[in-house]
Length: 339
Ligand code: ADP
Ligand code: MG
Image (tube, rainbow, N blue to C red; front, side, top):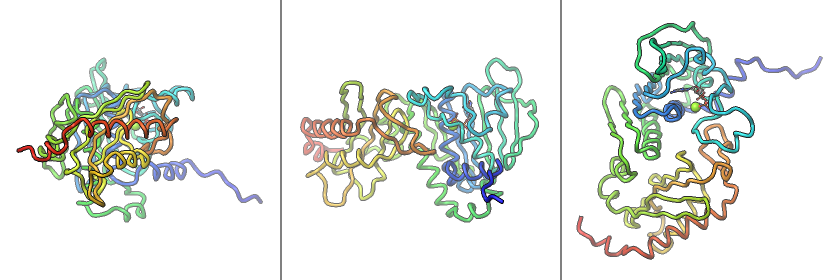
């Protein structure tokens, strides 16, 4: 008798869910990104107990057509990608069609949605991957997701969650990343019934930085920008005096997606060389826009790491651009300037 068996779909799905959903903040990330991909202008996030009891995201985006609703929760089902060739030209935040399936496998989900051409809304409930019938419901155009009791059917995963306060902190960080990446979207965040952020749409990144990092830091930001061939780098670096003891003030976005990149963090540190005290880490909010074929975001399910086709070139551009900004600005004068 052979020993190898194909795993049943429920086990496959739970394993896959583990890669996408680590904690409530992962759910928040996926739902907020879906709302943005749906063209929303207003997105409301609320959580209870750091997201372990409830994550709710409501948007005013395109909505989901009734016939698509069950499909949205199927693994590898997406409206954002058609063929393999599209993998090289991704313009949406999502494309793997994994998130909703993963979330629905390990929680209790309710989704209400309505498209503009439909009179009534549609509602579906899914518990541990088991979908209900679709029902009519009254709701505005857009989509709302309620994710309750995360990991209710995976007790081991649940024990890995930290305190409600810690989980709420991770949720807030996820919200911050999205809010910095998308200043033109009205975003609100409620935790345990209290509105923590109500961010009206703004045109500039600086206003959003001020909300999260304070006026003083925002006022001392230096604009950086360069366009080399088809790579556009823009954003702000903070005055060296605003540097921190951790990398918590460093935000890098590639095509509107928050990413972590050691090489670019290194380029930034190099640009500040000689301007910082030992152990201090620069604060920066930088966006990179480059043709989709120049960057591979399909490295990991959470897409927080990317691979550049020519990372040396981007390293050099970032280093030179920030250096140049320091050379042409009166850093010392700014340091002394009255508030
Ligand atoms: P992906 O985002 O990679 O396509 P998801 O599992 O996150 O995969 O979502 C599956 C599909 O459900 C999406 O492709 C989209 O068509 C639909 N969808 C999810 N969230 C929303 C939303 N907030 N508004 C409109 N459509 C949505
Ligand atoms: Mg998605």
